[in-house]
Each structure stands twice: as structure tokens, then as C-alpha cells.
Amino acid sequence: MIAPSTTIEKGGTEWSENLNMTLICKDCKEVPPNLVEEFSSGDMVCGSCGLVLGDRIVDTRSEWRTFSNDDQGNDDPSRVGDGANPLLNGSQLQTTIAYTDGSARSRDLLRAQGKSSTDKATKGLLAAYKEIGAHCDAVNIPKNVSDTAKHLFKLVDDAKAFKGKSQEAIIAGCIFIACRQCGVPRTFREIYALTKVSKKDIGRTFKALEKFFAQDSAGKAAMASSTGGMLPSTDTYQTTTSTNAKDLCLRYCSQLGLNRQQFVKVSQGLAEKMSTVGDLAGRSPLSVAAACIYMASYLLGKPKTPKEISQVAGVSDGTIRTAYKYLYQERERLIEPEWIADGKGNMETLPSA
Image 1 (cartoon, rainbow, N blue to C red):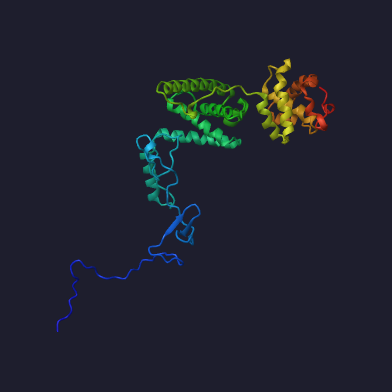
Image 2: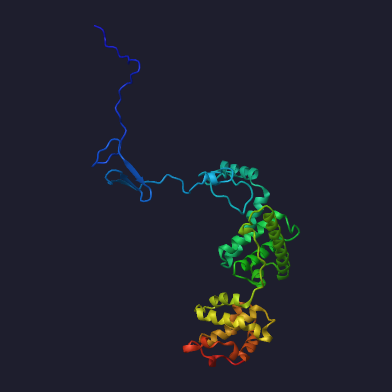
């Protein structure tokens, strides 16, 4: 008896059971199934009858819309890596070895990799950025001011300007300018208390930085106009104006607990009119702001002593009383009727000069 042949004829395939699992609609039972993935709701829906067959579908598409034909050089952004940091130089595509397990081998690899890949310029920038961030966080300066100061410092570092100048003085000047640029000005005295750089050095560095940034912005604007392009908003520099008393009133009122909008409105209104008082025209904005807040606090029924205000403004209480004396003499002309209307304030509560 001849055993049956186990060879497969030419062109045939060996039979095997199909173990693949196929999701079909239990109502329609169509094969192949007509399924639609709705990424907006995260559901798997039957395209024929609308029955929801699954939820929490993961959207595997790109997170952005790509217009490859409109990109210069047909540059298609890939989904690899983090976004580039404009405050650092280079491609920023290097690999960092983590030192988490605490082993000696990982420590040695981290040191070797750091010596070979990180250049001195990047280390210097990172150290300066860390110092700027620490200074801004110490006095609760907003993050946009910190970012502006870092951007200004990078402009100075890229141009290799002020080589003989102390880095601490440049950092102090960049923070001072950034505060003015972002509408939260600080005085030389406050920057000195923050960075321990003398007021004279801050003033000299500030003037030099203002001149450098203005020339740099003008040069970039001329180059952009010659090529027919537009200058980015981050490269445009507007010359700052001196700090006035009106800008300081809002912060001083907040620090003194005068959080009502009426206190800020009255003190800023008095600060705007201070130029009409001849004896106060040449005084420091610190003393003028302190005197305006002193008058507004008594006018609106929540008096603050000159000593309390002096601790916030950084001027002596005698200076506040002297400046207030000139305001008190012109009180009839300076105080608006609407400030004291309907019992909001009372001029009789003002202390005599």
C-alpha cells in the first residue's frame, strides 16, 4: 500500500486557521466592515448604521498642519525632538547622558560627554541666564521681563560687545532695561539692592547698552529694508523713557495694602498733575509718588504714615513730608471733584503741612 503524498501541488498554499480578530458591526455584520474613526470625539463608529463600536481612540495624526509646498526649500517639520531654544546657539541636537542611577560609570560618561559636546560659550550663556532668572524670581518680577532681559543679554554676547565690562553690571543693566520695556519699571536703587552693583555702574552700563541696542536695531532695520524683508518684532528696540511717578504708584499702593482701584486712580492722577507744581517739577519720582500716595490715603479715609510709605518707596519720611507740603498748598487745584464726590473722600481729613 502506497502512503498518500504529502507534497503540495505547485501553485497551491498550505491551509492554516485565520487567527486574526476582526471588529465588525453587530447590527450590520458587513464583511469587510465599514468602520470610521472619529478622532474629534475619540470614537469608532459604523459608517453604515452609526453604531458606536469603541471609544477612546488615540489620534495618531500629526499635531500640526503642514504646508510643505509653501515652506522655503520644501522643509517639512518632523515629529522628532524638542523645539529649538532661541536663547542658545547651535543646532541643539546633542544627546545628554542622564546621571540617575548614581553609578560611577554613569558619572564618568556624563563628564566625558559634557567636556566633548558643550562649548564654553553655551556654558557662559546658561550661567548668565540662571543668574538673571534668580534675580527676577527674588523680587517676583514677571517672566516676560526675565525673558526680555535674557534676549538683551544674548544680543550683547553675540556682538562680543563690552568685553572689559563686568558681567554683573551688564546683567543689572539688561534687567533694568527689560523692566522698562515691559512696563514694570524699577529704580536704580532697587536694581542695586537686587544685584549689589553700584548705582553709578548701573547708570553707566544702562546708557552704553541703550546706545548699543539702538544702533544694533537701526543696522538690522537698514539691512532688512535693503533686501526687501521685514524686521522681526523681537529685533526691534524702542528707546526707553525715564521712570515717572505714575508708573510707581500702582506697585507702591499694592505693597501698602491699598488695593482698591480708587487709591491707584487718585495717586496716579496727582502724579500726572505734579508737573504743574513748580516746586515738585525737579524732584525724584520716588518722593513724588510717595507724597501722592500719602495724600490719597488720607483723602480716601485709609491713612498711611510717612514711615510706612518710606519703607516701601525707599525715601526718608522727611522727604515725603516736604514733598507733601507743596501738594497740600495746591490741594484745591490738584484734587478733582469726582474723587471726593458721594462721600468717597474728604479734604478736611488731610493733615496740615
